[in-house]
Amino acid sequence: MSLISSFLHLNLRHPSPFLHGSLPPLPKISPFSSPAARPQPPPSALTVRAMKTMQGRVVCATNDKTVAVEVIRLAPHPKYKRRVRKKKKYQAHDPENRFKVGDYVQLEKSRPISKTKAFVAIPVTARNAPKSAQPVPLDLDLPPPESQD
Image (cartoon, rainbow, N blue to C red; front, side, top):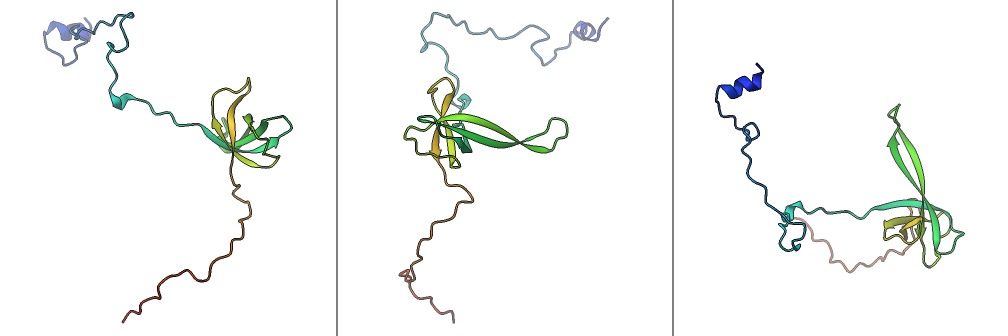
């Protein structure tokens, strides 16, 4: 005699409703009922999808309204577990043809524009780009410092 059958034979009530087959009935939903009649999930169950963005460098700008952007990411090597650079090229939409080879851009996911284009290129200042030299004003119109006695 198995353990479960001996457990059921002792007529003990187990807290799980699955052992006794006493589950509450499921609500009947007709496939032809209107969407308003169907039960809506609670608001906490709604999913928030973040916009997919990546940054990369333009490697080809010869096509009209299209740039090829190389995105580099770090991923663990499958065997050696060391982080290695993985490169992938994406085609991005550049409506004004303003990007040249070497520019850093941000790719934002959009509707499919063509067979291979589903990203839009947005300008980004490179991390190692030289800062523009803006003159620092000498007179900042600040009150004089108060002396601490």
